[in-house]
Length: 250
Picture 1 (cartoon, rainbow, N blue to C red):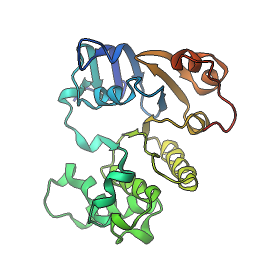
Picture 2: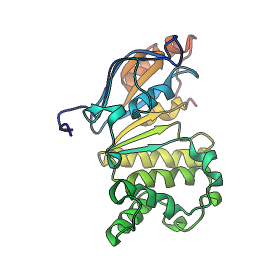
Picture 3: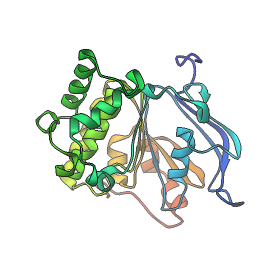
């Protein structure tokens, strides 16, 4: 593996991609270093989820290169370094398994589908404790609130001992109080050194918590510190309106 101490965790250079002849994202240059907390924002249909799939190696760029930890993203297979949390708040409602069984899946990159050792189970239980779900560890996912389900899936990522956490609009369908707790959890994980890439529709949460914002609408309109994003006009240019951010904006 290429030395991750010298390479960005995520490196997109000149990346363009389209499902048809029309590009969904075009000429994207994005480098994210270890320990950063980066949020991607933009209007519906702006290419945010496509960008996330390119980062994860689920799509191959039509042009340019996408790399994870110094390797081509489409070839990256070191699953224990990467944790992905999708919009599971609704999709996970039908999963008839417990929180501990969900988090156990995070150890599979290390042990395959074999029996977990005592030390593996300790990692699982520590991850559950970290996200504040110890009291719910034997509860079925079907019995959890949206916020609790998302915490369980973050614990799964933590159990893999991931260096990078990628979240695709993780608070969709989650109640307001749980959203606040969720972002406090992300803040604490970031403080511990985990790299976070967040795709989010909640601009208020982004501007309050992320340290860097990427504003996207097919191309990148802004990439820089959050306070500069708030003070600038990238939001209006990307959304094609006179949109502005106000304190507490949701």
